[in-house]
Every structure is written in structure tokens, then in C-alpha cells.
Image 1 (cartoon, one colour):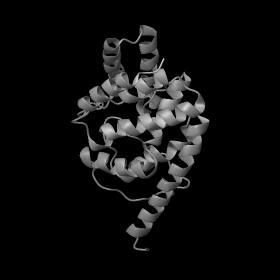
Image 2 (cartoon, rainbow, N blue to C red):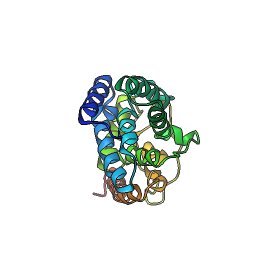
Image 3 (cartoon, rainbow, N blue to C red):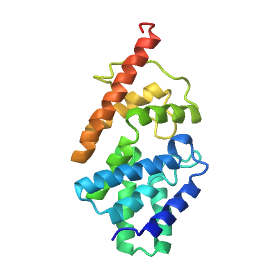
Image 4 (tube, helix red, strand yellow):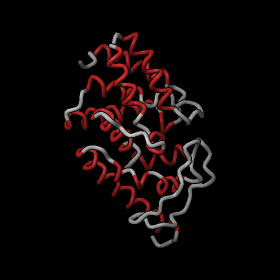
Length: 221
């Protein structure tokens, strides 16, 4: 059972209100893009949109202020409260909660794996939104908002990257560091055929950007 148009509008309005003070990288436009990606991937993969779409709307609803740790668990809790009022069954709510909790990179680092098709689709959608042109933009505004120490230098080969340590409690030392701690590794962890196909192009955009950035920093172009 999918959300009706009215139920989706109520869900959208509620989440948008909750995120009015979120950082730019996690503002409501991020939610909208993830929802759209989830719909596209979900339809292609045959996912249950009645579970997937509510989860997509709520996956980052608790990413507000400076509370990074366990934000997916807190997002799932907020989803549960709202969706009960919306009239969803406990079975549906439990499935949606599981999808949300396994969606984030923090969950991945904890060893939490997406079990259902819907969970795999949402994780792909969320991670795709961290890649490509928008991913580049989000990396820099996130770093600025949470006070990265510098923009950073490309000291490593983006086509054969080293794996740097990612900071799950705030911003990495620089946005460039963040590419090598997280963003360049997302492509290889896509869960669906559709997600893997979409990730290829977005990965190439990031690699091209980093090579150009390095060239400019070195005064070569």
C-alpha cells in the first residue's frame, strides 16, 4: 500500500518543517532529491514504494544541529511517531524503521547491512546524493558549516585512492579529505543494479573534479 497523494503531502510538509534549521547539506532539498532517486531506483528494481518512500522522507529528519551520532536511529523514532498518527500499521512502521536505520554511512561503519530490497534502494539513493556534482557541493558546504580547518589539497590519486579515516562525529579536516575518506568509496558499495549504473557517472564527475582541482592548485591550468 502506497501513501496517498494527501498522505505524502502531509509527510513532506512535516519533514520540511522539522528541517528548517538544518545545515545546507542536509536541508529539505536533500530529502527531496533522495526521495526522487528512491522512486526512480525503487520502480526499476520492483521495491515496495509504500515502505520505501516514507523511509526516504524521514531518513535524515533528525540530522539537525550538531547531533551526528545515531541520527538514523533518532530519525526512525521520529518516523514511527508520525506514521502511527498517519494510520500505518505496526508491521509497516517496523519495516520503514529498519529501512531508515540501515541507510546511513554511519550504519555502514557500524556493520549494519540493509536487509530488505527497500533498505538497499534507500541506501543507494542516499549515497548517490553524496556523489557527483551535488556531492561535490554538499562536501564543501558541510565542511564550511561544521568548520573544517581548510579546503584541502589533493595529495592522492583519485583514480586509485587511499582510504583515509572518516569523522562520523563532525566534519573531516577538509572537504578534499572527505572525498578520500568516504565519497570515492561509495560507488563500490552500491546495493542495486540501477544504483551501480547511476554511481558510475557520478563517480567519474568527482574524479574529474579532483584532478582539475589538483592541477589548478599546482598552477598547471
